[in-house]
Amino acid sequence: MVCITGEIDDHTCPRGRGSARRRATAMRQRTAANAPSALHGNGNGSGIVFSNTNGSGVPVALATQLVGPGSSGYSPALRGFSASGFDLQNRTYIQQTFSVDPTTGSVSSTALVTYTFFGPRGNTIETIAPSGQVTKDVFDGAGRNTFQYVTDGGAVNNSGVIRMDYASASSVANDVVLTQTQNIFDGDSNTIETVTSHRFNTDATTATGALGTPTSGVLARVSYVAAYFDNADRTIANVDVGTNGGQPWSRPGPIPAATALVLVTLTGYNPAGWVSTTTDPRGIVQKNNYDTMGRTVQVIAAYSPNANNGLPTTDQNQTTDYTFDGIGDQTSMTAVEPTGTPNETTNYLYGVSPATGSAITSNDILQQTQYPQTQVNGTNVNNVVSDAVNALGEV
Image: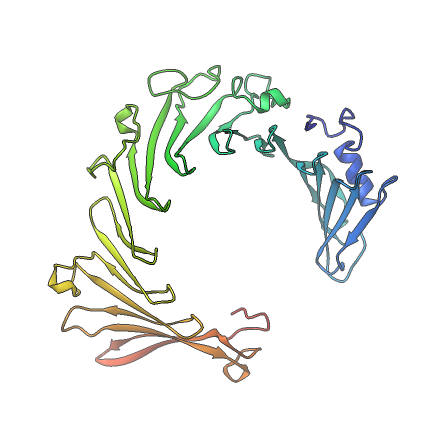
C-alpha cells in the first residue's frame, strides 16, 4: 500500500517513511538513525546523492544536490536540491524539487511536488503533477493501458483540494475529466483502435466522471483512429476518420477504402522486412530502396513506375540518391533531375585535425559539406561549409 498525504509534514505514513521534509533535512545533514548513508560525486559540478535505507536495505528517501565547480560543501556552493520518497517496494511515490538561492545556497521550505499512486499489480494508476494536473490510467489483466484520463483530481468539486486517497486514485467518478483516451487491442496486444475524447468547454463543472459522446453523458468531441497489422505484427494501414461527423465509429474488419472523410495510409514491406512503400491518403506513393546493410540509398517521391518508365519528371518519380562509406557515414546526397537537367549533389567529407582548425584528430567527424554550385553573374560559385570542433567534438 502506498501512503500519500496532502501535507508534507504529515506524520501518519508507515514507519520507515516519515515526513518528506524531515527526511530531506536529515539527508542534508547526512545523518540517518540506524541506517547507512552513501555519498557519491566529486563536488565539481556533478550530482551528489545521499541515500538512506531502512532495516531491510530498501531506500526510503534519496536527495540529489548540484554544487558549483571546485566546491564540495553546502552553502553557498549548492545550486540545486531535490528529494524523492520510496514506498516499501522501492517505488518512487513522491518527488520534490526545491528552489535554491544561488547566492546563499539556502533551500526553500516548499517544493514542486509530484505524487505517484500504484495499482495492485504495480502499474502507475495516478500521477499528480506540481501544476495540479492529474493523469489516471486503467490497465487490463494483461497489463495494457486501456484508458487514460487527464483530470482535476476531484479538486473542482472539493473546495480546490485534490483528492489524495487511494480510492480516488483508481476512479474518475468525482473528477472533472478534460481528455480521455481509450485503447483497443487485438490478441497480439497491437493497438488496433484509439478513441480520443475532449471535453466540451460548455460542460458544467458539476458534470463528473468519464466523458461521453457529443450528445450524451458528459459531452465531448470524440475522434477515432485505427490501425491494421500483418501476421508479423507490422503496421500495414492507418485509418483516421476524425470525429466521423459526430457519429460513433468502430474499426471494420477489412481495411476501408480511402475517401475524403476516411484517410487511409498504407505501408508496404520488402522481403527483408524494411518499409518499401508508403501510400498517403491521396494515393501518392513514396518508395524506398536499400543496400544490403539496410541503409536507405534511394527515396522516390510521387512514385509511379508507369510514368516516364519510372524516371524523374517535374512532378513524378522525384528521386534522391544517397551514398555511404564503409563505416556507415553518409558521403553524398544527389537530387536526380529530369532528363536534360544536371543532377545536384551534396558531398560530405569527414576527418578533422588541428591542421583544419579542430582541437582533436578524428576520421569520423564531419569536416566539410560541399553543396551544389550556384551561378552568380554567369560564373559557377562553390558553396562549401567547413567545421572545426573542440576537444569534446562539438562544433
